[in-house]
Length: 131
Image (cartoon, rainbow, N blue to C red; front, side, top):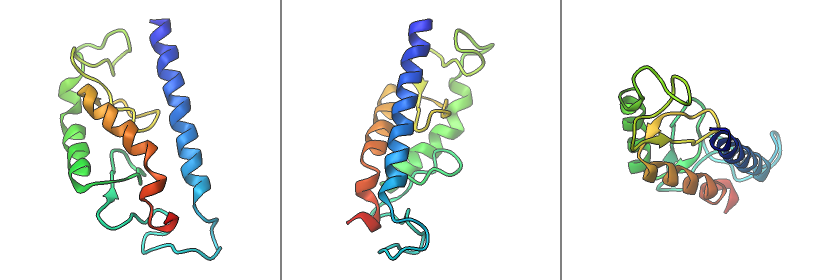
């Protein structure tokens, strides 16, 4: 269990670094930029905010945003009844935390977690203001 917690904390730290890079990649408030209607987090054409959690402005395809909304609705049914090794957020067998952010413990299939990681890694390249 300790190893699993360390692994999760390590991934969480990576997510924070990615978020810091994303925030650092956009122009500071009040500076000239090519920001769109939604400020520095305006997505390139064809992308929308993921909205996996409140404040999630990672740009993804509309299908992925719809998938995230479905996962949010289904998440509670994918938790282990009565909790488990990770407390009340323990997922049933076959599901893992999405981890779109360190606090995102919605239970999803492993492929969805991989998708969230890939989308986080591509976040800066999908912003309208970064080219």
